[in-house]
Image 1: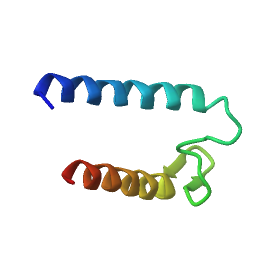
Image 2: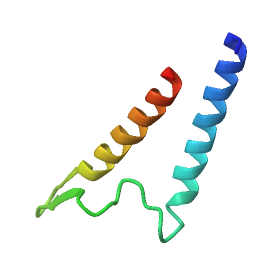
Image 3: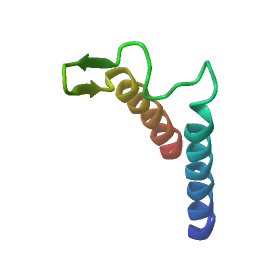
Image 4: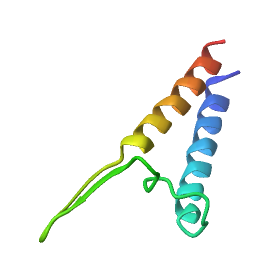
Length: 71
């Protein structure tokens, strides 16, 4: 593939991910960033949020994508 096609493919993937994240908040089964296992500590005047499971899931997905591109 040429460099232009690679850029178009990457742009389309980013566009689809952006749409999925935007529309995904309204879907009951897809709540990226609010998965079970994400750590939320609510204090009196503050909230600490650490998306542990979201980070692990994104890491696995990106690893699979990079592995497929190397083949």
